[in-house]
Image 1: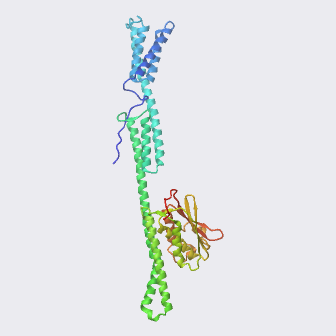
Image 2: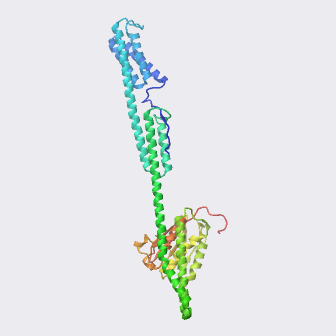
Image 3: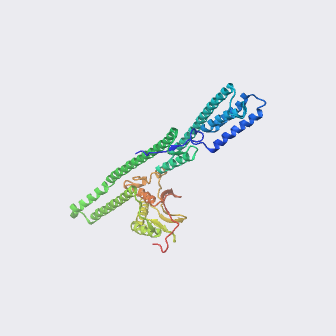
Length: 444
């Protein structure tokens, strides 16, 4: 439903054509008549009555341009009366002994009133033109500002500012008044309504794009799951079927190999499923994750203890300084992020892997550094996208690990970056914000 705007426009002094005359206007009219009379008395001996009449006509013209219609009309009548009283025989009376003088006075009164009316109309039209120009400039400024508005609240703020500017000007807005004032109020209203409509349309388009993106993500997840889970499921089913149907014919080594295959494929399925569920939850949840004060030393220690169980070559080294500040984090998600990074490094590199934690004002950086072949620059931009695989990934891998790691970092207000390591290899750096106000007491 369209909001109803009810304003009135009280005309500015430039447009004033009616209303109660002001004391200042009466004083100005009286001063003009007094000045004209004084000039006439000075020139009386030197000029004719017609010239003296022109002095009063000049006063009437000035009054018509500067004053309202009532004051200027009164000045015209007063000019005829003063000319008659001071300069028409018999002087200092209101009598007229000559018919020609009477006709001249009547003609002067008519001319003075016509001049007053024409001057008032010209003044009114000039004021209307100036007022229209001011209003056009205001509408142009408002339209320009609304074009850059980014929200409905900003549109409403700009509208309030425009209305306040109109009310504060010489042509202020109120409840009744001229048609031009109502048209300007309607123009402001229409401009604001169009801006609000654009905001609603933009919001609808954003919502539609987000929904389309959400549907695309879901479709891609389903396609990836159906593709990447078939091979391990087929391997598990095949190995389990062999054990069930041919156990008596298989030796101990063959049975051990089949059981190992089942365990490995099941572990892979567990990892893919967990990464997929976590990534979906982080990308689609409207609520933030639950964070608490955590010690990065404890999280790193737990991750290293778990990962080193399948690090037979003891290739992972760590460097974690003491006295690091606490971070607001979900320890399970941060541990999953670091586990994914270390697992990737163990799978795709053969050298030493360094896990280094450093602190700086306002942030903590956890870096996983390897001495592998590195990631080509052409692949670095998309390495964090879902189902992106580097050349070193091989045929296996759903490509969700790094995408999940980046989503976890962003959910914590941090970032995950990739850098080429000097001397060869890659460095994945997790940067987490550190709040200045740390909790009191011992670390959890």
